[in-house]
Structures are given as C-alpha cells and as structure tokens.
Length: 386
Ligand code: NAD
Ligand code: MG
Image (cartoon, rainbow, N blue to C red; front, side, top):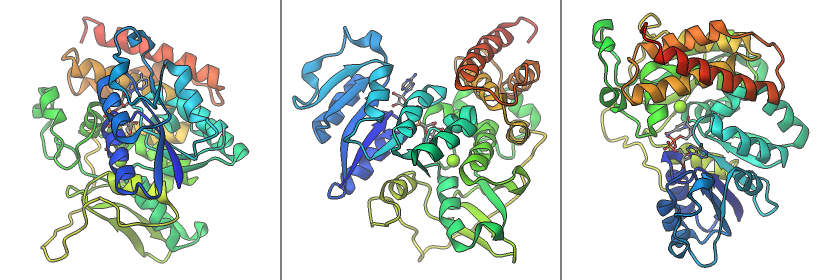
C-alpha cells in the first residue's frame, strides 16, 4: 500500500488523482489532502476517503468552515504551514503536487526536503526554482516523477535507449483553441474563447496558458530540469489530436512516442504506481476506429510566449521566477477582462527585460523576485497607455 497526500485535491488534477486512488484502492491510500478555498468539496472528499488530515490553506476561512461536514475521523487544519507539514509527514510516501502556480512551491519544497517521492503536476515549482529543487532532491533522495502528460510520455520513452543516445526531446502541443486564428482575430479573443480548449479539460490558469502557448514554454523549462537535457535538444511540435503526448528521438533516427486518449488519469496513475503498471480507470485507445495524427511546426510569430520559454530555459537564474510571476498576474488580469489576450506575452516580455538578472539566486531571492514581478506586472497591466 502506497500512502498518498494530494496538495490541491479540489482542482482538475486533484480530483483526477482521487479518481485514480479510488480505482486502485487496494494499492493506494489517501493520508491527507489540501484545498485553498473550496472547503465543501474537500469535506465531501473526506466522506469518501476518510484521510487522517485535510488542510484548508486559506486560513481566513477558519470561521466559516462547517466542521460537521467533514468525516469524523479526519482532522481539519488551516493555513500554509499545515500544507507543508502534511507534505513532509512520516506517514506519507508520495505527494501529488496539484496546487496551481507559484503557491505550490512551498509544499513541494517541504516534500522534497523530507525525501518524499513527488508526483509533480505543479510545473511552476520547476519554472521558479528548478536548479534549487533538483539539488535538494539529489541531497535528500527525493524522486521527481512527472505528471504533466508530455513529461510522463518522455519519461516512458526515454527507457528505450541510453542517455547518451538521446538526440532530441519533442514536446507535442495541441495548439490550443486559437490554432489557425489570424492576428486580427487574436486581438479580440475573449476569456470565454480562450477557456474553450479543444482536447483537454483543465483548470483556468493552465487553459489560458495553453491558448497563449505559455504552457508549452513552461514545459520546455520543465523538461530541461526533469531530464537534464540541453535546451538545444528540445523541440515543440503542434499535434492537434493530443494522442501522441510527446516523443524522444534517438541518435539513429528512431522516434519513440507514447499514445493514449487525452486524459490526465493515466499520467497521474503512472507517477503513483511507477515502476509498475495497472489497468486503472483511464480511457484506452480504440484500435478498431480510424485515427489520424497530424504534426506541424508552431507559429512562433503569432504565439511569442513560446520563444520566451526557450529564452528563459537558456538563461536560467532569476528568469523563470520573473516569467512565471508576470504570467500569473497577466493571466488573472486577462480572465477578469482587464487585459487583451495578446498583452499577456507582451507583459511577460517587458517585465522579464526590466528585471535585474541574477544568475544564481537563493530561495529568498526568488521569493523577493516573484513579489517584485507581480507588482510590476500589476502596474504594467493597469497603465493607461495600453
Ligand atoms: P485547478 O485550478 O483546477 O486547481 C488548483 C488547486 O490548487 C485547487 O485544489 C486549489 O484549491 C489549489 N490552490 C489554488 N490556489 C492556491 C493557493 N494560493 N494555495 C494553496 N492551494 C491553492 O488547477 P489544475 O488545472 O488542476 O492544475 C494544477 C497544477 O497542475 C498546475 O500547476 C498545472 O500547471 C498542472 N497541470 C495541470 C494539468 C491539467 O490537466 N489540469 C495538466 C498538466 C499539469
Ligand atoms: Mg502538459
């Protein structure tokens, strides 16, 4: 029995993770879960799984949460410290990091520090603090297993050859809801348009990131840290069907791909049961049907966020924390209707260019830079000149 904690159990990845646990209840058990504000759903989850502890990370809600809605055997706690405590508890083997944004860093850090196995969904942790997290993981023996579907595919495909035989890692991108749109159409793209993802059902932040291709940009950086490859070895290709989740090309020209229907339960399950595989509850390919697979290069002019990702992956240092914070603020402003779609990458570009580059920041430096970039982006996006 593997003992699991899910940080962010009420989100898209969180609820899918609990479905995986439910389907494999003879192998996986839920020890603890956290939610930021949706305590009613968290309470329902305790009724199904009766975990030892759950945490509402927004401590300001402690007055309004109805404790009687939670399972009587489940302890209810509040605040960020309780999240970090859960992530490092002795009775936890694997931590699913399913909190969205840089807010996920603290819990992930605590879990890595405690030497836990990490089922890593919160890619922002690696964008902000990739080198520090990898160094810490090496020290504590913590293993980072990818949940992101592309990185899960690469993780699986890499087993087909030796590290020195890897020529390229090819990340697939669906292209998002705006694939094929003109620049003029993109100018007036609304949050509703951007939230209509053609193949994946995800939380709002990553859905907007998929529309700008910032998600793929962040995944380039994520791949660099997870697989210790040179940025020149990473490619992005648009594959609208989202069936091939990524590929590894070896030196002899063989490209090894991983295919499955677009459903996050499979990569979550693989991270939780690795190195073993079980049937589980994710949908399977229907090989009696006719399938087409299309691949095309991305439009880098129309979606400049992608090149920002390659640039930040190359420069490293403080760039990831600044890009991530600027993007989080810009996305949230766009969702509120305060920013145009094309201004999301524009804001990121300007804040990145304006920051004082630090090649080797500490965790404290990164936290400060994150705050600085948030303030600057807020200012930029509130400026009357745009
Ligand atoms: P979501 O918005 O659906 O869920 C976010 C979760 O984080 C919720 O449980 C919420 O309570 C919690 N949360 C939000 N703000 C918080 C805060 N300040 N402090 C603590 N907890 C907070 O997001 P999602 O789509 O499930 O994505 C979660 C992470 O997984 C992201 O990093 C995303 O990039 C990554 N990811 C998601 C998918 C997907 O299919 N949804 C795929 C690959 C990677
Ligand atoms: Mg992905």
